[in-house]
Image (tube, rainbow, N blue to C red; front, side, top):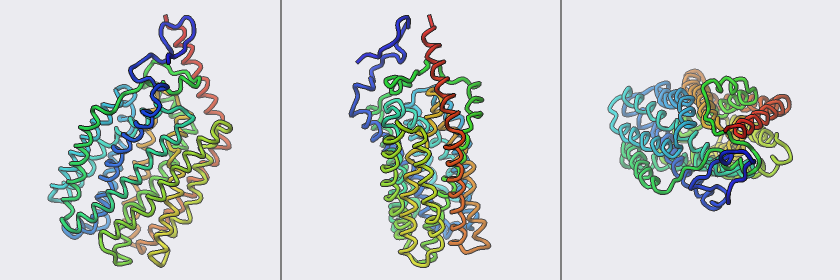
Length: 448
């Protein structure tokens, strides 16, 4: 199928390439599956460290604050690298960025298993954020060029399920392997498998034309890349700024639970290291997979009739999850904690499926990589970077369970912000996006 374009254009609105999105069909979903595998190892590497906290604490005589620093160091460098990584993604081949990032963080993960001191481990742990920072913006940008607004939430929701599966795999298997062979063996294994996957994907992953999916539903895609001066317009986009703040709230809660629940279960209910890792990871992440599928379907189903649908779906997710976050630290039985974790996980999945799809609705096509990087910067630097240390510090004065429970209020704040954005801000920024799209089309038409 050829791309239709207006008389007088020198070239199609979206130039032809070997990867023709309308003709791809199954490959558009195969791309989601391939990127799913990469994201799986990204999150498996992250969660593996949290599952071996008790062993690290014993071997290196670490305090709760130092353990929190290991969790926060990754999030801080990951967030700091976000804007640069996103800008790079908008100017290079996404395939190169994805596979390069995968190999980089996998090699660093292998070196982490060789660390002999807290300082070395902290440096390696933080450095993994450099490789992983470039992957997610590149993956989201690539998926948005294979899937239009009509299937984008479902595609990104399916990609999001790899986050949960990776957290399960990294959490449980790292704990199980560490219990028998030590924490170094578990960390080394995930790094080695990531390196192998990167070599396999060199032949399987293909680069799409930027903006190709949206061109077929009437959205214009400028052939110009994002200039540095264009970032000012993004900063002035109020809906985007609030969505970033909400993402920071979501990351804060997620990092609190992912970092501290394994240790909480291990110390409070006297579980084995493997079972504490299993209960902390499997139940909420499996529930999140279901939530992500439901949230993606609901948003794509109703976005045609109401552009606010993605925000309302997200709002429902965080407000429904808030009481269960509190119960994760306040329930008096193991079964109560597991039930609360599962309900939180389902609610989180509903929110997560629309994180970037909602942002892409209000920003230019050429800025999607940059926007993903900026969101990661705010979400991980402010939210994820602060959470592990904050709860570690609070646990010096409160029981760990009560310290964890306080993070439920952050979800309530996120819900209030989403309601405000849907009611007061979104329509203005959607109109601005439409005007920008029309201007881009006019520029392309007028080019000699």
